[in-house]
Amino acid sequence: MRLYQDATGGSPAYLAGHPVGFLLDANGPLFSSELVKDPQFQSGGADWLPGAAWTLTTGLASMALTSVYDPLSQMMTLEPGASYWVEIDVVSAVGTVLVAFRSSSAVRSNTAGLPASGRFSCLMTVQAGGADRFTIARSNAEASCVISRVSIRRVMGRIAAQATALSRPTLARHPKGGRRNLLPNTTFRDWSSAFVSRVDEGNNIFRMVENTTLNEHNFSTAAIAAPPEGTRITATVDLKMGTRKFAQVFMFRSMSPFLSVASVVVNLETGIITSTAAGNGEIIPLGDGWYRVTCWGETTFPEVVRLRVAMREVAATATYQGDGVSHIFMRLPQVEIGEGTPQQVVMDANDITEPGVPDVWHLYNDGGDSLPVTLPAGTYEIASVTPLGAVSYASVTSDGVTGTDLLRLERMADQHIRPGAYTPAEKAELERYWRQEYAA
Image (cartoon, rainbow, N blue to C red):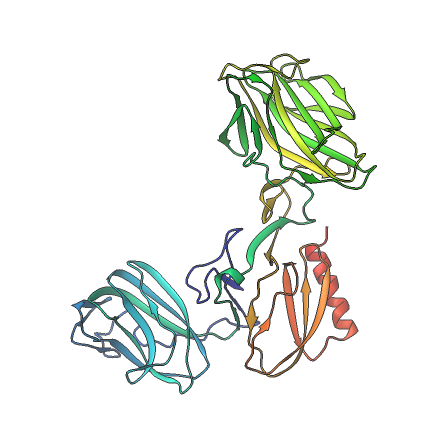
C-alpha cells in the first residue's frame, strides 16, 4: 500500500500528522510494466516526437526557453477511465511546464506542472474517448526544462482519492495495545507555566528554569477528563536535579475548590520523599541522577484533573524568590487510569510511541473525512479494524461510477473488501488474524 498527502500522488505521506489524500493498494503488482519506450533518452530520440524547441542528447531531453506550444510527445494507447502513474526526473525547469495525456491536441487527462528540480510523480487518469500520446510542453507563458527520465505505468491496484484537503484523514501511529497516557503531550508544550520557562534538551528531556518572581514556579497541564469517582489515577514523571534539588508532583481538581488527588515532594539529591498529601508517592532511582517520581490517589469528583510539576527552594515551601537561572530536568510525564505502567511518548493525539512496543499506523477520521474508491458495479462487504483489534462490517452496493467511502471508523488500521458477503468461517479467520496483529 502507498499513501500520499495530495489527491494525485505527488507527495508521499509517511509521518504521523500527514494528511492522506490518495491511497493505492493491490493484491498483486501495483503497476504494469513500463509503457515508455526509451525512458532515459538513450537511443537518440527515435521513439520520441520532439518539437522545434526540444533537443535530445544521450540521457537528456532539453526544451529551450519558448513561449510557443511545442511539445515533446510519445505515442501510446491510453485507455479511457484508466489511471497511470507518471514519474519524471527533472534536472531543471523554469516557468510552468505541463504534462498531459492528449488525443491529437485535445487534453484528455488531468494536467500537472513540473517542479524546479527533483523527481516529479503524479497520478493521471484518462478521460472519456481515450488518449493516444503523452506530452510535455510549456503552459501559457515562457518556459524551459531539462529532464533525464520519463516513466509511465498503468495502475493495477485500487485507488482511493480525496480532492478536498479538509476532508482528508490523518496518518497516525499509536503503540500496540493503545494509548494509556492521557496527557495532551509529553513535551510540556502548551502547558501552563507559572514563572518558569522550558528549554528543550533533546531526547525528550526538558529543563524547567525559574524566573525572578516571588511566587510558585511550575508547569501545569490543561484539564484532563477524570474517571468516575473512586477510580485510581496515577501520575509519573522522571526528574533530575539541576541547580534546584526539591520538586513536587501534584494532581488536583481543575476547578474550585482545588482538591488534591495526590501530591509528593521529593529531594532529587538524596532520592527521598520529604512529604506526601492526599494520596501516595514513590521515588525510584533510574541511574545518571534520574528518578522516577510517582503519585496516585482516588478521584472524589467526576470532573477533571490537572498535573503540576513544580520546583522548590526548600521542601516545605511552594512560594519563593526565583533567581532567573536555577532549574531541574524533567522527561516523560504520564497520567493514566489505574496503576503506573511504562511511559508513552505523546507528541500529540496522532503521534504516540512507547519504547520497545511496535507502532500501529492507522488513519484518523476527525468526523468529516472520506476516502472514496470506485468499485466495479456490484455488492460488497467491507471489514475494517481499529488499532486495538475491534472489527466491524458494512455492506455496500456500487454502481461502478460513484465512489464508495473507505473510512468506516474513527481510527482505522486495516481493511478488507469482499464481493458479496463474508462467510462465518471467513470472518472468524480474518478476526483471528487481526487480533494477533493489533490486540494487546
